[in-house]
Length: 357
Image (cartoon, rainbow, N blue to C red; front, side):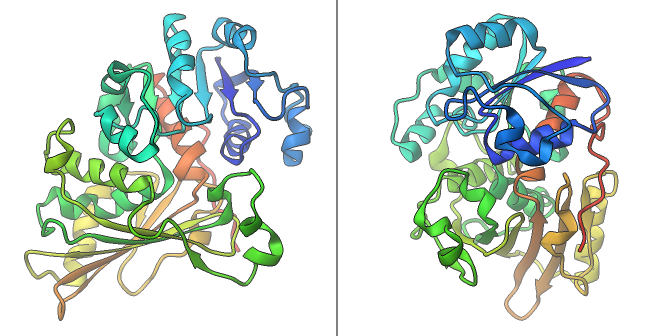
């Protein structure tokens, strides 16, 4: 059995990780820790997990971390920006595997992280050693590795939505626009006025206006990787316009991606191209132009559903890509990555039908 522990267990993403792990035949929980919920039972933080788990949440301190390293095979973290590397160093020194949900080790060049997070990065070398892995694109990089950076939610939906046309060299540089919408679990669990029911219900709003969202450079780095650019030279990456929105729903991300193509293509040909790239991918479902995807088709799963289309009049690609933001956008993909690094079938514990309607 693979023994796992979680740092940041009270978060929505880690609650989803625990929910999905109930179905995993090869795992067993070791310890759960959280800075804000220490001393409480995990089912007090995530009531839906009552009857499945009964662990007390431990405080985030050196004693807890020593115990986690000793008793775990893999450690998942969903902690504050700037705090990941210290935990990872201890886990790796103990010979264990490490999967992080945050952005601290997502960028090959740590200076990119510093620019967008306005902090000093504590370990430049760790960002070069970490493997960033969207499995459908980078699984071979992760096999047998111990330090995994789990991708962000918006970048996952966007990158999978663009991968075939980018790989085919069909996208005109610097023309990509990503119009993204997320349910409120994507905003985290800490209270804020804009997340109150009275303010969030029956409302729709943009946030991080003006190209300021921190997932922007992650998407640009992914595009650079797919198109063969040097990940240590961000000045050579093509830029995008990325604008996220909050929608009055709990789960789900939809990204509508626009890009100018350098050649005409019919909707049928585009569908066939995407099918060619994803026909062997269990978690990616491609639909024709006549069937726009919906976030409900992915709820509670590790699925990504994509409808690629082409507007011949404007020579613009229009792709709709949907995921569950705390599923494929966080916990589901983390389990998929765990399966890869432990040599298991990627679908282990993740063959779950969406919650529909």
